[in-house]
Image 1 (cartoon, rainbow, N blue to C red):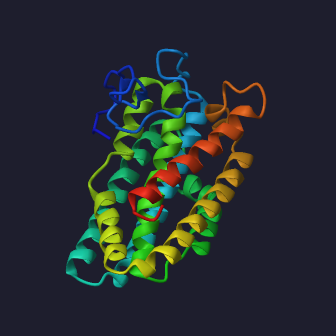
Image 2: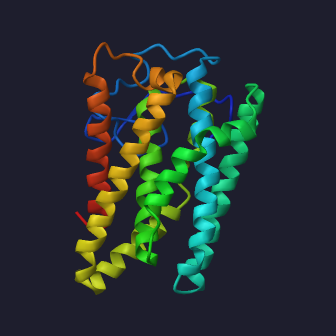
Length: 256
């Protein structure tokens, strides 16, 4: 996603060339059940669900930083170690952006991270990669799953909040590195495809399980995601959309 600055004016959804609405600054089309900006009324800036969203993202950034630094030793060469270091550095830049905004909103950073640490520990603890390639698949899939949540709420956020999340979800080329590593490996050894495909399914399953825990405990965040839902239809569509996007990413990794 293109970088932006807090306070910048939001833009209406563009088109992917085929008529589908896309997120500003992104090539990813909005899911069919997500109404584009301009067709809904943005939430007020002080909505507690926005603070909850930033809190989840903040805790995710610091957890991802520690995960990446611990996995750097799996890198087969200096190029890989540098890439991991750059990924970890980007996580901390995003952490600082979110921390500044949460402080502005009156949140305590230590309490916010502690609140979400158990669910993140469960996810990372159950998806600890054993190989460099598993680490790369997790990095690529994890970045995408985080972006999915933004795609779901982008149309409801006020312009300042949207701008901040755009910065945090900004594409930096790190996902491209992970994708290219996996593609090259499975091209050289097709026998790697099946176990990495199973690994990708496990990542998705664990992510959905932990997301359900978060939504169950964060009523304000649930309100942001499903503010238009009159029944369970939108909740179902939300998780179906995540699964569809996951399948597309697996195809991008040549693991579909």
